[in-house]
Image 1 (cartoon, helix red, strand yellow):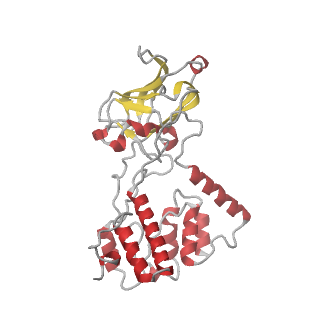
Image 2: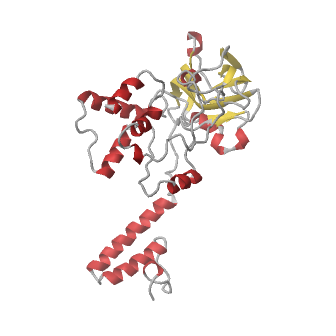
Image 3: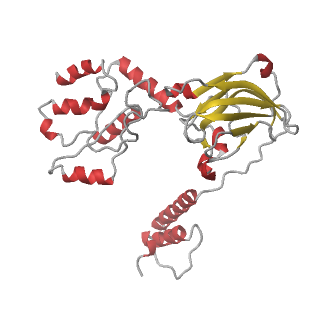
Length: 355
């Protein structure tokens, strides 16, 4: 009754799921089992009221003031205070895959007894989760060469290449400065030029209040033409406002573009600029004589280790069938330790043990 009543009450509250679980426990016959509230051990990201640039300002008053993860000291404190009772911590279960993981460990079927509508909703959520973080399949900028006026601390983690890697979880960040630019070269050995219908900017919270989208049809002459100007009058109030869809006018769609450039002239924060991804939706004129001559990816150490172990198991199996398990194990050890090569005779036996 408490759980259902709180669910009805929570329909009229913002982000009530943050406190639902502990509210039920503390108002139930199991209240003696609750050791600590979720919010007792917290490390606030921001001070109260500092919501400038927050991605969820339209959803919650204390926007951006979320607790960090528990650290080692918090864990010690909670563990010392549990008085021998079991300790549990859970928060924000969303991805349907989480249910599958829990089911496999607990030996239950969470979906048993669910309505068909709920199962359909979970399947839809799973598909959305699978698509999350991927760029539009029509994006022709993925893998193109990109360069920037600067990168944060000259780090590879924030390099210009992150703008066009097709991964929404990586980003480019500039050094602190007002005037910055990023350029994506469309012309390469494979592509003559591209015609774009739309350009989509995915800014991080360090976004640009003012910027220009410029295009170039002649890289040698560096003739840049401004096709779009963005001038924000107000700061963003949500994540959706950091995604800018720029639809090019008809006369610009017919251009044979060799490169595009984003010139940023006014920051929204005290930092520099940061962009998750730039997408260009359109088509490219491909060189018909181009042949992808990329060599196959080099083997990693993990790949080599797996090959060695496979050979070792094969030799061990041959020894077990022929000369006995001891001989096979010794031969396998030689292959495993020598990286697939015959080991010198003075080496020890299986994993270095024995005489």
